[in-house]
Image (cartoon, rainbow, N blue to C red):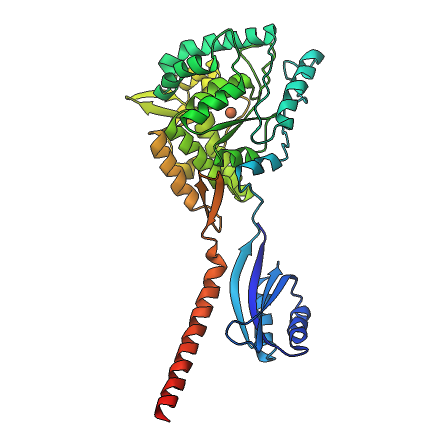
Length: 426
Ligand SMILES: [Fe+2]
């Protein structure tokens, strides 16, 4: 984030007065970004000018302020504070339509080691399905995909394999929700569930929404969606030649790995908390949040009744890594956001390290506390009635103004008291 600094210059209302002040700024190489004028509420004979200056070193600005004072180019100069340039973020749920869907991978562009790289029919199919995500607008019904026999068979193989392992290795919340997904969303070995049905089910349970995505989004866009309880989900499926392997998220990963826990109230809140922390965050904080997300929502483990269980989608959608994570091979550390967010990790092999959460509720509080110390000059609060974000603590510019006004009001009050006393004595 680059910063601009804001000054309040009080200048007499007479010809050439503003020019005199601006000349001082110009001679000191001050780059003015914005200037606004308004008559002073305290004295009609003077004007207040709010001036934003950009990329000016503090010592240069202080020197300029000294000159303004010495030359009486301004009657008073008040430093209002530093204003950070905050990356754009969606303020209401329909703003998610503005995300550019900068697809990092997948979509129709496959890397040469993808199992479907040489299968033109598969590539065309993905392109066709990805288009649904590109066309989607908030409030639309998600277009249903008519999955082919081959695609459904690939789903069936991995569905059976994974569900046979869930009772032993998945956390209790996943095992609680799975029967509901079978009953309400058509989860079965013979049927790939449709995003619209899952969307409606999640709306009734935790208010989470599904939004079709054309591929892997940037971390910022994806995390921003979570702030609104929106999960961007791919719809295409892995190549049928290797049903137990995918180098990227596909509909199996999303529906088996992610969806069950979005129906759990504590996990839904935990996910939204990470999303809210991402709004307007610096690139560095987005990277740290993406790492937190990686070690929780993707590869998190927890302890339930003294036994390690999986809740991360990367584990719940990969029978190989699910077994690995429950073995004695990987390192297991307690979930501490400060440490987790700095941890490096491999993306093409099983994780050598997992972080174990005490509970989703506890993890949510930990992330909330961690986010409160992020390098962000404001906080946000979600308004579930309007599905919009309220920006809080944005008073870093306003507080100094208020203080300045208070001192002026104090002076005015003293003057009035003196006048009243004089009138009384005369
Ligand atoms: Fe994922």
